[in-house]
Image 1 (cartoon, helix red, strand yellow):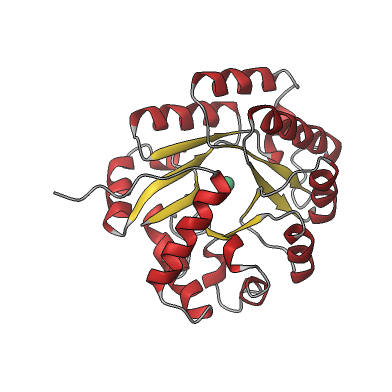
Image 2 (tube, protein in one colour; image 1 turned 135 degrees about the vertical axis):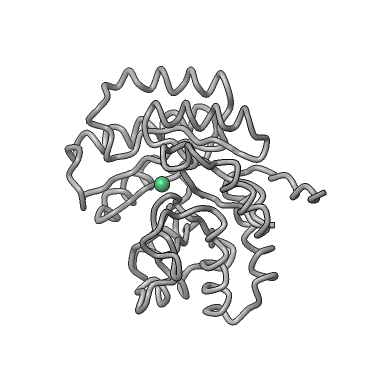
Length: 260
Ligand SMILES: [Zn+2]
């Protein structure tokens, strides 16, 4: 059984065919989906999907890209959502200095606010970090966070060393299937018990689906590439990843329902 540990099934991209996207995934053994919010509206939509499908688990937060759309009062609304339907984590939050959609200072303030909320409700944090590993590390370390999740990890071996010291989990996307992906070398330095896989659907389709809309069924390409690279078989890797995902989200995912 595979969990897609990070996807955005609430997006418009899936509004026409979500049931078939889900059944394609189930055929491949992907039976649970962590649906991540990136602003208030998408967090609400993630909650609504979770209400509808028992195998969808929501995460609420404001992406660093989107921090500029909001005042700090948005965290009251996030807390209302938490009270309404408990998520399995907070995010995606973090820092993105690669794209300057929102000022760095505002991103840092929002990142710290997410940390406060996660502390208050005892939830793990899903981080999006791009070209901002040093500042993100400092913020997480100063707030004494441990065992959070680095989604779509694209850092260096040196970054792995830093975040390992905070006992964090590293989400590997379809980027690892790309030709000459620098991620292959980096993955070797991640402890086996801290590896996760994710699609980040509808983004980041793995080879051979590159350029098309990504969907959870495609996680098998990432799984197979990673298994080859680690010189293990897909089945052993699958059970390792399930154990890791449950530890990261501190949540027991339901077994796949038998198909009738
Ligand atoms: Zn994402």
